[in-house]
Image (cartoon, rainbow, N blue to C red; front, side, top):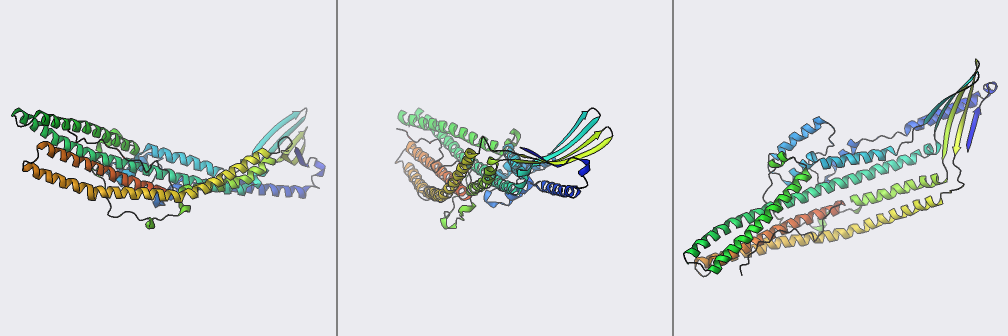
Length: 487
């Protein structure tokens, strides 16, 4: 339906002057509303919030690199970090500086947040100009139009845009937390694999010497063929274990290099520590955990998604019935030197005859209820996830402590006793070497237990923050078993 209201004759211009002034005033007000619809947003504000959030575990400043000068400054800092042993915090800072994958993540969120902020603005008005000639008569038409319904719902649209930006910020924080935690996992694996490799190298060196000694003793008749073969089998097992440990170490190191984003020359400078951090004396107490369900990132995101859909539901219900466009028109007619003006307004209204929008409203209502239930489920699952992850952490701590305080000391005692018995010629060299191999295997299992503890701690922190993390309680790291069988 199109309605045109206005003055179209020169004779009535004076009589309608006051109404024309009123129309001009209304038009100016509409322009003011249009200008006010330009909501602003800067990604630097999101970066500042990221850098102020200690829960994310980031080290150094998170920067979205957009210029070569920024890149040069960050490369200089990266070189400084690579010239020293790469601890866990240094690896995280290096990733924030060097990783193209991390920078890609920031640019993707920059785009999404800009789109979210854009939704707080209304569409630009449309200006039309036409020139019509009929004989000696020339008509110039000027027409400006904008969505009246869109203008009237501007406050609601700005509210939904604000919620969308908040939701985008929560998602950005969750993704950054996930990247940081993934790097911590890779660092633990690289450090643990380097420590395991050191054990296998030491075992291979010792067994090589023993095998050579056994070979000489066999030639002099001081060792049986059976004992000689047993020594060679131990060396063969150590050779295979060393090859597998080297491959696992290379793989873990390359995973860390890729996550950080290093070039080959930079990777050659990277020096990893050959050990994991020491086992803490006491575990984290559940009473010391600052756990607030509403502060979890996933709970915040679920709540914001529900609030956003709730805000949009009103707009969608209204737009499902109709749509309204308003236009102001000014025509100038030149009839063989006689000038006349025509001014007026146009109003376009969509009439709901064939589609009353009932199905569209049902879709909106169903989506709203689904988001509501999803939010409730997220809140309910949070407490359960905390109990599960904390139990996994305590189990991993107890296992690692048992290895350190019980199993390793007992194997050390066994090795000491075996050494005494060997010196007293009670046992042979093969039995002594076998006990040493068993102790080395126990030490490798202790490294696995310590690594699993730190992975369980990362999972616990992930639950507290509400980030996404691909770690399960049964994700036990595996290392090639050092065989000690000689029978």
